[in-house]
Image (cartoon, rainbow, N blue to C red; front, side):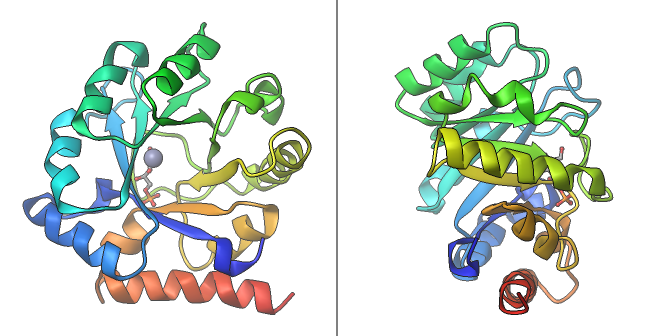
Length: 228
Ligand code: DX5
Ligand code: ZN
């Protein structure tokens, strides 16, 4: 993966909600590829975050793609609502979904990009039959539910396996990672084959600000590639 093609997806979970539009604009100016919106229902994960109203509020203030990570039970019930609010892509978990193929087809029927997410304990092999139908895979590198957690290093060989599957089954499919991504872990996941990095606290929690944080991440990814 060359560093030019590695994309950053700032997660607004770590943003200052009192000035959310401003924070998204800062990320956009600093070269963000897309904005990652973490939706949690207090049931699928032990935390509650935001709903379609946030997507609706952000839609007019940024041209960036709004990627919606649904950490909710029964995502099918909310797909239309998020699509109408302005989500460009909907990411749904493999875990807890007995009819994942149907969910994926519903997202496609709404004209949105679709991604499947797998948790740290879920093997890459579950993606084999669904990969051909999706635009992206998201490998969780922490257990979903909270920002600012430590990166789980045992996910690295899985990222490599997913990269191999993508090359064989669906070249062009994005391989995104989410959780504990910072200037130290970013080079590791890129090396393993990720081409889209979600980062929350490493971008919005940086004491020097969003632009400096984005630059640091971009440099870390670039250095890893040039050291090779
Ligand atoms: C975790 C969320 C992540 C979270 C990442 O459940 O899916 O997107 O915001 O936060 P950091 O980058 O702080 O680990
Ligand atoms: Zn997320």
